[in-house]
Length: 173
Image (cartoon, rainbow, N blue to C red):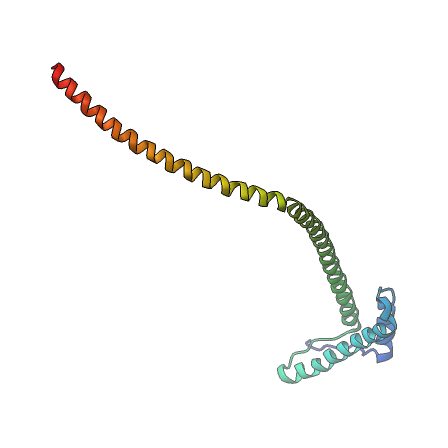
């Protein structure tokens, strides 16, 4: 026997509103609770009603039945509440991450400020050291020039000594 009996009756919109209100009542909705709560209840009943309408369209197009029951409405609410909890947890994790990030940025800014003050305090000393280094560089260049002159004269003298040593060596041989 391939006969089925459709035992599923529609809930009236008032019943859907009442049931959804009982499930959504304990939610923490903040300051806008008076406007959000009725909106949530309306949303749940509208979604349930639109799925019920699509059930008839689905049967008309594909000749296949599926049933939207009061249990489907309860599952819709349960799914919404579960998703809401997940999203709230994600937001809380994001808030914690941002709080830690802000704390680290504040600490880093304080460290940079301290380093900037230290750098400003050392600026006169840095200028003094730079001037001393430039003077020392000029002196080193002068000393290098003198050393190059002495090196050239030593090279000339060395060449003459080698020449003399070579002549002495010839005579000695």
